[in-house]
Length: 114
Image 1 (cartoon, rainbow, N blue to C red):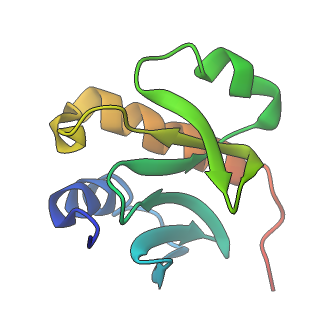
Image 2 (cartoon, rainbow, N blue to C red):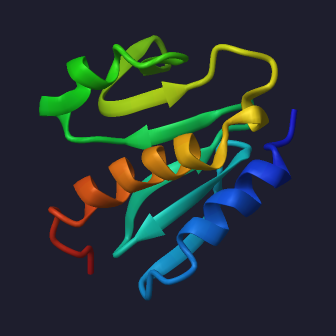
């Protein structure tokens, strides 16, 4: 399954003013990187992968359609998956913007990759 182009377009619009933005196809999805750090990705399996402050992960897991990101059978610290419905592209603008903001806020605390 390919990633959701509409969801990718929504993320792209929200990040349009970010000067250090790059996009990279990864694992069948589309990742959005700031300063070389993956911030958010539109997953090939549907939904979003969002990089968050690991200290806030427990709090963010209380939100609807959110689970810990698991890859290769291992939980990925600081990564959440936003999904849970077949209509993930029904994320309203505010919800999508909130998740993109979460990812950007955490990545801005990291030093740029060289």
